[in-house]
Amino acid sequence: MLRKRLRMTLVFSVTVVALAEFAVLAGMKLPHFGGTRPSADHPVLVELFDSQGCSKCPPAEIELNALADRPEVLALSFAVTYWDRLGWKDPYGSDWYAARQLDYADNGKGRLATPEFVINGRRVVIGSDRPTLDDVIDKAGPPQAGPDISADATYVHVAAAPAEGWAATIWLVRYDSRTIRTQVSAGENSGRTLVQRNVVRELIDLGRWTGDNTLYAVPRVHLPGLASAVLVQRGRGGPIVSAHKI
Image 1 (tube, rainbow, N blue to C red):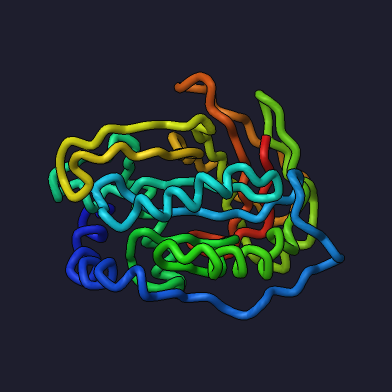
Image 2: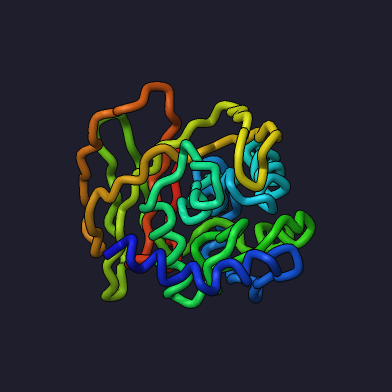
C-alpha cells in the first residue's frame, strides 16, 4: 500500500521538483505561547526531505548543514526513495521517510517535492532559499502548546498537559550528527561528493499520547553513535507540538 501511494505521487512530482527553486510556501508568524523562546531544550524543528539522486538537493543540504550548528534548531535530513529510479540509490533512503513527507502533503503542506523544508510540521519552504528559510524559522519559534519531554537511554517521559481532545504520535528519531561524505557515481549528481549532516537513520513510532503523564520504552539501538530526539506530533502529518534533543 505504501509503495502504491508513492508511485501515484510521482506523476506530478517531476513537475513540482522542476519548479522547486522558484517556489516558496511560507505562512504567517505563529504566536509564542507563554513567551517560550528557541533553545537547546525547546528547539525549532526543521525537517529536510531530500535525496542524493536529486540534482537540486545539494544546495539545500548545505543549508541544513549550517543549521545543524545552531543549538536552538533541531535540523534533520530525511532521505526519500522516489528518486532512486534515476540511477543512484540513496544509501540513507527509506520508504518510511517518503511516507512521512506524503503525510505532510496530505495535510495541506504542499505537493511532494525535493528539496523541501518543513518547519515545526506547519510551514514549508521549497528549494534552497536561505533568507526565506531563516525568516520562517525565526518567525516560527519552537513548537508550542505541547507537553514537556525528558528521556534517557531506557525511557521517554512525556508529561501531562492539556491535549484538547486530540491524540499525538510520539516519535523517536535517531540521526547521524557527524559530517558524512558520499561520492556519487551515477544519476543526476554523478561525479559529485555530497556532504551531509544530521542524516536520519531511524524513525520509531513509540505510541500515542492523549494528555496523561506517560512513559515509553526506548527500543534497543541498532546503529551505535547516533544522536536522538523526541517529537510530539498531532496525528500523521500534523503540527509538531513539542521537540526535545536527547
